[in-house]
Image (tube, rainbow, N blue to C red; front, side, top):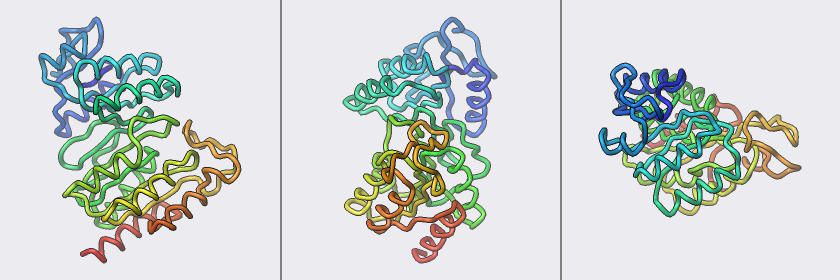
Length: 281
C-alpha cells in the first residue's frame, strides 16, 4: 500500500511501482476512502487496507510532520515492512520508532531513502528501475543518487542486481548496513555485494567488522565524501564529520583492514565488482 497515494509524489511513484509489476493493492489517505488512483482503491485507514486488500508492506509518502504517525499506524495494523520515503523526520522521533519496531520484527527502510528494488520482480520506492537489470550483485547504500549511478555503471559493465536497498542518510534509520548485509549473505540470488557509504557516523566501520567475521560473499565498497572538509554535511543529516572521526579515509581504512576492496569513485567500485565477478565466474 502507499500511505499518501493521493498526493502528487505518492501517486506518481505508486503508479510507476504498480506498472513495473509490484502488487500495489491500496492507497491510504484519511477522508478519501472509496476513491481510487488509476484503479488502485483508497482507504481511510491502514487497518482497512490490510483487512480488505491484504497489504503487508507500506510505502510512506506523507509529509514529514505526519510520517512517524503514519509509520506507527502501519505497524499497529500488522504491516511487516515499512519503506519511509519521507525526509526531515526528527531524530528523537525516529529513535522512538526504532525501539518500537525492533521487538516486533518489523523491517523498516528509511526515513529519507529511495526504497528497494528487485529488478524484474518488484519496486517499492523511487528508484528508477529502468536503469537496472537482473543479476547477482546486491547493492546497499546510504545515498539514493549514488545508488542509481553505481547501478547504471554495473549495468554498463554487463552486471545485474539481485536487489538494491537504500537504507537512508539520516542519523537514525530503521535498518543498518549490517541488517541488509545479513539478508544478502543468506540470499541465494546474491553472489557479490556492493556497499555504498558516506562520511559521518560509524556504520561503515561496524559493517567492516561484521563482514570480516560473518560474511562469506565478497563485498566491495564506495565511500562518498573523500574531499569533504570537517563539519561538511553533504546534504544528508547523518553525513557530518568531526575531526578524523567519520571521514571517508577512516572508513576506507577500516573496510580495507577487514578485507573489503574500496573504490575511490563510483566507476572504480563498479569495475572492482566486475573484477570480482570475473574471478568468481
